[in-house]
Image (tube, rainbow, N blue to C red; front, side, top):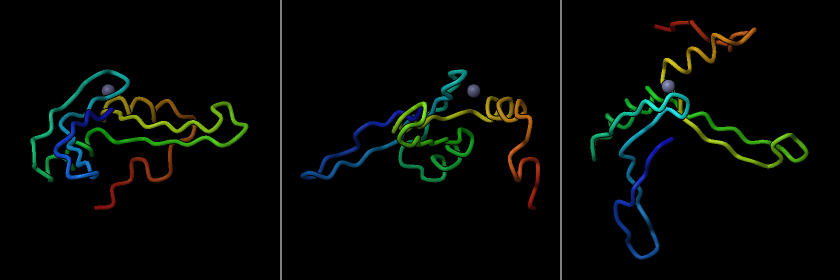
Length: 93
Ligand SMILES: [Zn+2]
């Protein structure tokens, strides 16, 4: 979950500023330094956003989900998989 606040409104254009990111599972959060683009990127990498969309007729018919997990919760989640995601545990550097 990313907390957004309105930074400024110019006519009909609204600019949003992310100031905090929170893990939806455990509630751990991190403040984002205002106006620091590298800090925003760094924090969003620590709390990856998972976005899902479900099709017509599925269990969650046409719902769209978006949530964030901290690295620990993401690792716990992935470790629970019978089949790990492609690329998991591979270091390309
Ligand atoms: Zn977490």
